[in-house]
Image 1: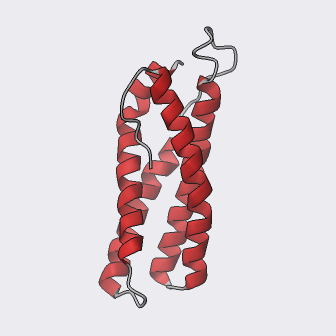
Image 2 (image 1 turned 60 degrees about the horizontal axis):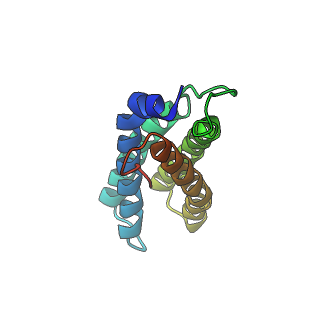
Length: 141
């Protein structure tokens, strides 16, 4: 599977993931120091939606080694980056769901610690795939 095929197969889902993940991050930024039950309910729903999409992305088939052509040699690595990052970001969303049930600074810190490196990994992989597919506007987080 080349970068164009990956983009064709998973581009719409990657866009949904990027949108959902950014929406969750915005919800987290808007949390008050003592979040209301409405804020927590909204956060839990948004995190659950993002987590479902991310878990599915973690199961995307990735290219095997031995791709033909110099331009495509980075495809398997980038696909693996994206799928592994999706699984890690899903774990961050699970932490937010825990937070919504029982708010604490420690649980919110767990979300932050899981999200930051996984976001970087996703962005690197997805940017590389869109670049190799000669496509604009990679769905970065």
